[in-house]
Length: 425
Image 1 (tube, one colour):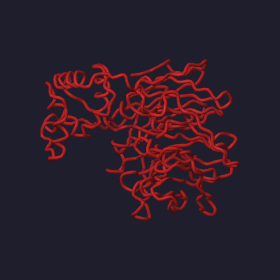
Image 2 (spheres, rainbow, N blue to C red):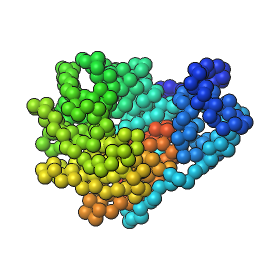
Image 3 (cartoon, rainbow, N blue to C red):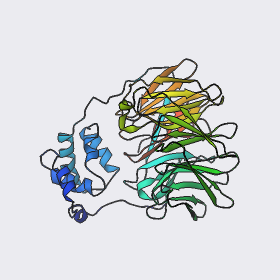
Image 4 (cartoon, rainbow, N blue to C red):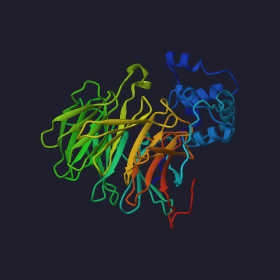
């Protein structure tokens, strides 16, 4: 196993030179013993506004969160924890509203080796291995859930892999969100093949899928494009999304081979005909644009066996369903309400699974289309966010929590014979 560590020497922590605007921002931190330590340790990796935007945590929760980010000497960590737990204690305004029900799930979670990598978009391959993208570690990781063994492969610096997907040969493909590339990892040899975008304007490949034809389709979010790569030739074709600022995000293929896209920047869904490359757009409800939180709209979508398109409206806190044949849209507000920020979504056996990412803890939801009822569960390490979830070959779910550096497996209505029960190292 390749142990890629993200550990900052203490000398570096205290040698951070801050620009004037950052100093003004840091001055807003509450006074107290340990304030300077927190400023130095946090700004080495991210801005302190992340602390202000947190829900506040207990001493133990702050400890768990920090351990996933950086290794600190005990004395330094103790002082930082005391400051954070005192200045940013646990708050209750983002507690979820849980919906009861009769179904059961089992959460299994593993902490990934490299600290601060923010794992995301895990996928389980047919051999039972779980792969993930370590976005800020520039790596791809693999977990054997039967043994807990993990392996990590380093990618080119600055790749910032955003999403991964496997092909039929067992290769893992990733979108190089940070350097405008698409890459392929061969886990057997460790060989990495990189394809640069043919248009320099396509700067940020985002989410990808393999279609039944074997082509690799992907969104390019801030560049407002969708693309296709032909694996046999490496040929890449790109097309602009008609709506300016649509910010194409998640995508899926329906049974007829059409490519569906969620728009983060507009109240629409897009559908691409892979033969003509024509993009058709479907409006989704937007009764009050000013109410959208952070201008987030339809991040991700999933498609059931009837070709109904299910999507999450993150800004309004709704689960939605589009019938492409009739154009009819029906929506349901999630149990925690308009501010819940549903993010990831997956359909398993025509049951819809999603999460409420703005709640603390993050919440996994089950929605039954027949009864139109939700059921929900708090995620054990739910201080982070599920940004994508995928069905496993045996009908379960793989999830993750970026901020707590964990990847997970959700067993649906059964327990596995080979897993040691709920596992949280």
